[in-house]
Image (tube, rainbow, N blue to C red; front, side, top):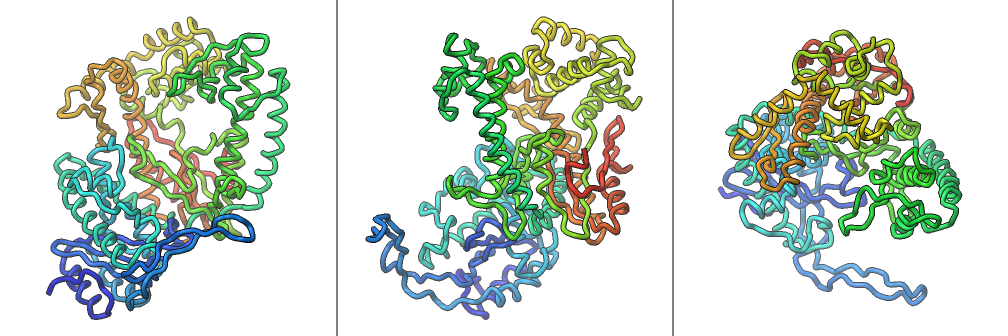
Length: 634
């Protein structure tokens, strides 16, 4: 019996489930509506579509419109206010449909079976349906967006539509149906939902064998375990102290007013801080009206840049730059982290806090190196945890009564990874001696005992370490350590003589990547690929850029491997009542009942740095803190 295209009766639903349930794996996709359509824990699922080998079906659950559009959406002028107000479209009556309760009752055996459940961005779809089941459907899972990313992390777009167009030359949804399904006729949405499920199935069955062919099954398995660990995080969200956030907003607004006055005082004039041309005039214009600085960076249009990176060279050397950087930083914090969460009616920003919680999306496929990105809100770009603002932002995460916060991160993990790959040498030995990596580096470079390394020497060593990791040159080291360019160049030459194994590792990594075909690539510790096609480019600028990315990608990709593995280990070993809240780079925050906080800390420690996590040839260490506020962990 053929599978029905559109299911509107209980009998059709049973037929569709019987067809899909006869296969070992199936793809599914949801269409959502309501004020919180993008928050899977809170949205309303109004359509679900299923696809597998041989058939696709769509199941509407309360779509408000019929097949015919009687009048299109428009707008009219309000006589009282003179403003235009929207007039919604009018449709014919919708057909009879099953309720979500009826549909998900029938679907439960299918979703809780051992069949592989496939979706494009599966965390969203799985959490969206989980609230109707009362629990998250179990693995195995498949995700076509993760598969596409593992095959080529450099793809410009990983959305379903771009991938389908690139693979099959097929373009659909020119009307933007998926953005607001309730604004379209029944038949249009049915066709759209059908295509989403069908193309997800096609993409997955095309991409999954390529993962095996590329030798990436181990990384795929890790990413599917990560997906499983993300599901309870996405479903529960993280509790926020709204009052503390409001106090921070008020404090920042006051500080911004003071910082603005300080900029004017330093510049000796009032100007529009929001105007890039006026900032350029003040900073780069000739004295006495300007500061006479030399631009270090240009924008895409060729104009002198006034962003934080461009001005960092002059930090500590020019009073206007110092005051302007302070003003820009405070403004960014207010706009991005405070009003970005609370919302701002004047600027049209919507609140990201729902029922006292934030529900950030963690994209495991969000970067080329394997690290997470996040959005709505983005917590991966939080300020450093050892800064006052960084601590204040982290402190908005508020454990509910009876719970403690467990916070853990790895100690100097990127340098430990570098020591592992570079093998035995001064950096490697320093970790085995229990030394701070920057102290060990400074001790070697300056030929002094570790206990004689002062703050200035450590800062120079730290700058060199990250210059190596991120491909920066002597000028960047000079800026970071506040030393002259000749002195920075000298220290970098000394560093190369003192740590030959690091430079040998970099050279070997480059040779290995260039030898690989068809595209140059490197492998992380757990086998993740990072493809750098420009390593063979004839354009020197592109080639040099790829060479700078090489070590950074190797180190950060391995860091991502280790952090993701720790998350999956914690998800499998966590005690009842424990919940992973957030991850920021290699930091993990966990909610834990206070009565088992000590046992919970041991579980988190073991997940991150226990015997099974000793994957490097130097010790992998972490420190788990039991706190009431995140800032107490530092």
